[in-house]
Image 1 (cartoon, one colour):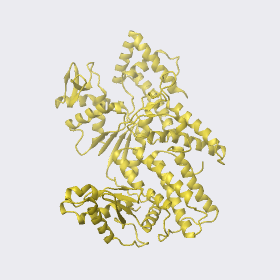
Image 2 (cartoon, helix red, strand yellow):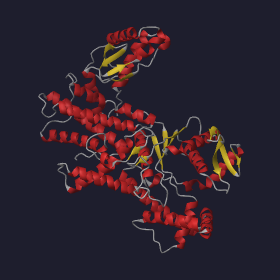
Image 3 (cartoon, helix red, strand yellow):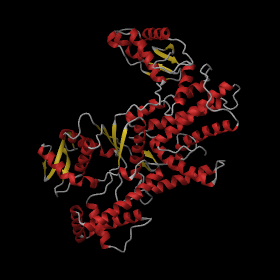
Length: 596
């Protein structure tokens, strides 16, 4: 595995060095403000941004910087390895911009270097980082529904990207498997043995039983008393009650895993981190908070308060760690969970992928944990919020009768629509191959539609748009990958050698240049995703790459190229595009079929 310095980083290094030479010493290392440009390969706005501070006309400073870049410029040796700086051709533009063009040989060498590395030249830069990611978190005895979609998909992508960059990732599925609702459900099951719930449709049956138990709990005070007594039995370790509870947990975990496997999610039963795990720790958490005077009595409950957090009436908002009835609040469990992740898992970063409505809760939990000494300053705890999945009416996505949409039903709908779309194409697949592709396309469509949206925004679930073969969709990206693989197969079938050395002395067609520059941005994009925790940046990059490849393919003959060297270079671009798309799709959790 070798580290390939991104062209943008090389250009930034070159411009920063040139700027340092023309600026006063105290401004050495000024940000060159380099970005991609449609007028050149890159544009540097650093001279314009800093000119006022040194009392110089922006264009004069840009010209001086360009002169230093030109003086340092030498033609690259075609056989040399990519370096930490690169020669560029500068041109002063407008009030003080620098338009920068990278030599063709530098770009060809970069393509060759990334192709030669099994990891596309991406060095794991986050080794030594231990990241706990808390995501998905369904509830035992309840079916996974559309409300679990975003946490599951976003959390899994972050786990993939961070692991790819070298972080040790500890996936945690904080399953809701404890609490008063289980006393109610177990009591109802015990009193209605005729209502079977185990078997193929166990989760649907349990959902129905839970609703029936809730209705009886509300309507029948005697049943409510028996259910409360069952909670006590569960918490005290009654053998029969625990046996039923374990059956509920096992049945639910199997159902969850079936959904994860279908979605291509990394979570396994080994990642389960149920609330029940912390039951024995909660009293100790509360005692420590009381001893440190962080938790105080508030109208019979034990609460902690965070400075500056007040409600609409101006009163402080409490974080309830123990309720008036002696039961523990969710905050106590979250604090016990956080403490374990620091002490046992030695986390340096903890991510909670939970919807935006919990922002205040996590702000207070993190504050209390830091004051208690359970969350050291060198450990970052971050709430990763996300918006809501909406229906066509712009309201939270529901069934026609106002119920919660089952996640499996949603996936069935997407696969069915993908199957119909794909059937209209001349695909040449066997029935078994076609079904595998339809499943990959439908599931990928749902995941990509979620991940391509800004994480914090709501989005409308529109299955017809999701499975479209054109536009910013997962199916479009999968087709782009399959198209690349088709070209490489045709080359092999025609006896054209794949993997011939790239000739860096050849010129670049504008479409080749655009594609080469885009291919070089994967490592920068992944670093950006890891820092911002925004998967849509990777989705947007892959869509841009697919479009750049389409432009290249439309304008640059590959197999019909007139020159063997040109053909070899273009096949190299095809191969790197295919590998880059496959890597990016995998990091998003999407399959990359070779044929569609």
